[in-house]
Length: 105
Image 1 (cartoon, rainbow, N blue to C red):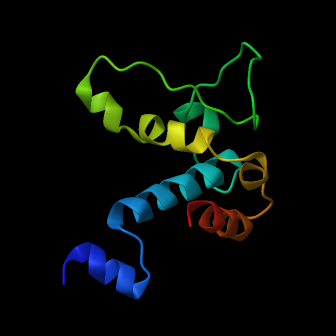
Image 2 (image 1 turned 45 degrees about the vertical axis):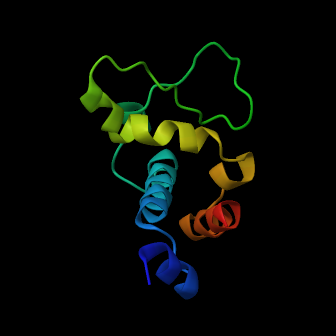
């Protein structure tokens, strides 16, 4: 049996899906102060005031170098911006995890 079939039979996510989920949890921790890393150290935010959705939307900057595309801040920005306001503004990490699971399933 190949990889996708085994995952489906066991009810597991692919490695890429698990990495994406862990990245979003880490951004949540940084954004809400559960981590020692400052949010402004990693992300730049739009100051024009034309933001739809939640207020924690980082701007994805243009990349001139190929290596920049794989930085954490660049890799996560698009997926984080797609989340709804309820998930982004959850009170605890566990609440955010459960809401993320509901969105990704």
